[in-house]
Image 1 (cartoon, rainbow, N blue to C red):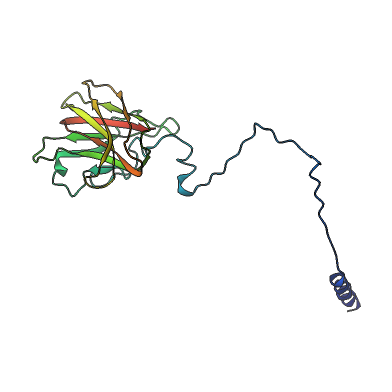
Image 2 (cartoon, rainbow, N blue to C red):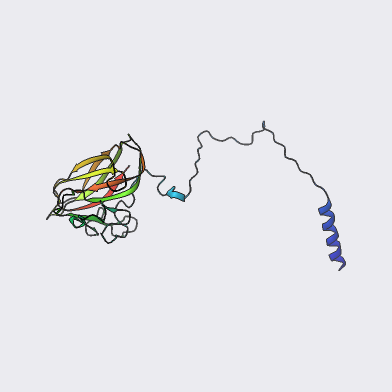
Length: 225
């Protein structure tokens, strides 16, 4: 018990004793030099700052690898105009692994996919049919360069051009820029380039691929920067 009393007394004396502290700043004293070539930045995972903020690529799921919906389109892509349109049967989609560019992922060896697009003859006057991806942020007057890898099958290959456009993301929205891409015959993968310079700034625009022709093609590795 006596030891316990002495501990309490010592603690009370320490608490009751007033203590002062001071900090002295000497601006003339230099401890270390910071290189003028050193730069820094702050990034975090919120809002895809790391995954998409550090790359010029603007297209998500470029090779159509995400699980498809009932129309055959991966989650990031949607039907144009939309599934309420009467012309849904005029174009069909299907992710396929037997035709892909490249055939497999280099890192894992897993099979890649391409998107098979089949455009049939239209039975109504609306010639707008294809697919698009939203949340594409564009600035007026800036040129955006893109490409897509396309292959035609040996039978019933697509005949016609493809229209690529940056547009307002709603029904009957404004077209900010568009390019016509002629598709040439051939059973090998070919890279088709296009450039788009929008007339308006839109942080939530969409990139659309429209197919006025008929026939079948495979599309893979879509890009826009």
